Image 1 (tube, helix red, strand yellow):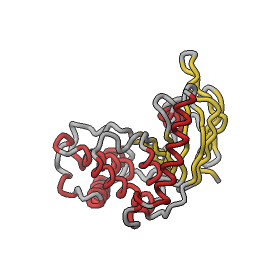
Image 2 (cartoon, rainbow, N blue to C red):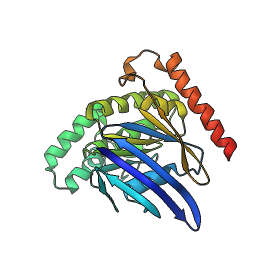
Image 3 (tube, rainbow, N blue to C red):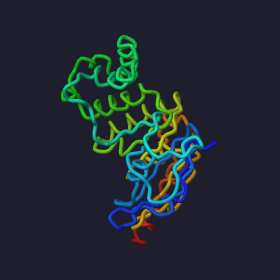
Image 4 (cartoon, one colour):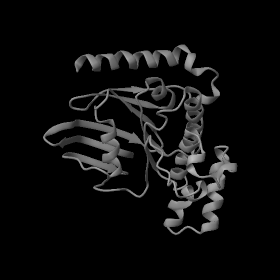
Length: 253
């Protein structure tokens, strides 16, 4: 059964067609990315799946059931680190579980486990402003994963970070996905990042937003274990093929 299924999705806003005839199927535990030019509707797709926005036409199904609003097993991560500035890091991570009735001691223990996973166990008592951008991004991931989401929607998760930090968090995120196997839809404007993280990449065109082509990425799942995988001929071919089609999309515009 497909974990997520978008069928014939159309989104019209203020008389303008934002998305047209979007069809995407995502299997349980699959990691897919969506790339495309600016204003092609990538983020709109995430908003629709998360229930933050409604479609004009078409259906959205999770585990075979049509949804109209927010699904409790869906987590959403934006590029902006939406940490509560008035709460310390431990309190930020435990806010969701405690709000849903989890015992406070258990929630703090789980929060500590997540901080250890990201090497941040010494920063639980810090305020968000005391952490670097990369640290805040890791905390944001922990805030979502502690809720055990079956589906995780990520919008430019690594945007705005330097190259070394981006690669480091990408490895950590990929390991986390491999261990927990949530279903992930990942939005990025970086083609190399999409190839590195994903099992499938959907390329969109714009005006209106449509699916232009789907790429199946057949690289080892444990990519962090393959030395210099980004410099292998196989990896380069996926990136180049994706780039060629991306240039086609730009020319169409």
